[in-house]
Length: 177
Ligand SMILES: [Zn+2]
Image (cartoon, rainbow, N blue to C red):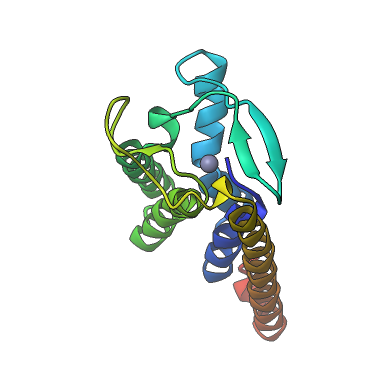
């Protein structure tokens, strides 16, 4: 439920492994939100309705929301492990599997900065998060932070791409892209 900053870890992860499609890392970095859309559409989790979203007041929700199945800490660790296991079945490569798992978990870490309502386990368990979105200045900070890490991710991605393309020119038989 956060911004474009989630793409940054996906771009950095992709730059370390040219053999895995970028889309796989993008899906990994957005796993929690994809699950949230699935779970909220079947009624397992409530839909978050925002009433205010500006730099004066930050983000205000119509009702307090908790999404333990898609965004709880415990389930986020489980989803990261599941994604790592799927990646391992697919690629049979431990390094790829670990990077995919970490990319999935990066979503929770960024959401931890943004939100204050991430369940530790399930409904009724304590909710955690720095909650920068709850104030205007915090929300402004998160927006700038999102743009900066996305820009850094794009820079890392294109630098790695250039390096791979140069390598392909020197060793055309070992194409990795
Ligand atoms: Zn999220």
